[in-house]
Image (tube, rainbow, N blue to C red; front, side, top):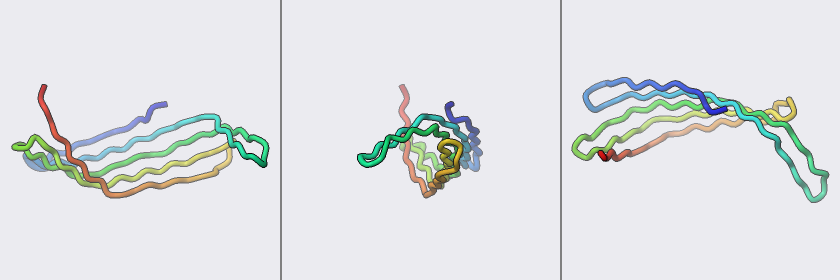
Length: 103
């Protein structure tokens, strides 16, 4: 299943924007663990979680460039054969520059 999410952009002034995004995902697969000393083990695995970002962007019209700084958070849970095996959290600061061209 592809991720499903919502995004919102709020104009704060002529060239400054607040951006917020939230998405959720659900994945499933069959995993196989191989070991030279152990028999091969197969698992039915499910992974699900959320991604979120909150940032502020400044559009520099004379340079056709947007500078964006903010934060990102991701939470993911992995279940193998119906057992809660792993939880992962990722978070940090993001910085991006986007140059816009017209075709």
